[in-house]
Length: 185
Picture: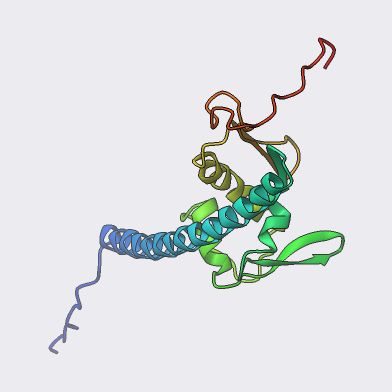
């Protein structure tokens, strides 16, 4: 009676299985990082368009002989083509349409790439705006305003510039001096 031995197929060791899991996880994270970069590129274009809209509002203020403009970032986004739109659901403003972007792109860019995006997960519109606001302020601050800041607790950005004849201005050029202020102003 002859015993027939089954041929052993080499099985992966537990450590080799773990190595495969790490390799797959790194590949997925790399794909997520690529999606995050797509959002950052897209976001930069949206913000550039937002800065252009901000500049138009400031030009309008200057044409009205003002040296300051207060503009809502949220209102500016309505002038940006293909900016993500919102819908009100149960009194909450949620992102409805991502325009030329994707929710997953935004998620990976702003919440990290370690955890996978779950399609259909709602994103609050305020969270989207808040994630973009610091970069918007950074870009607007590069325009050379005397003062440019966000009003705390709002989407408003206030920028001011030098009046004609003021320090660093055009040297007067026939402009009338600014009225004197009392000590109580």
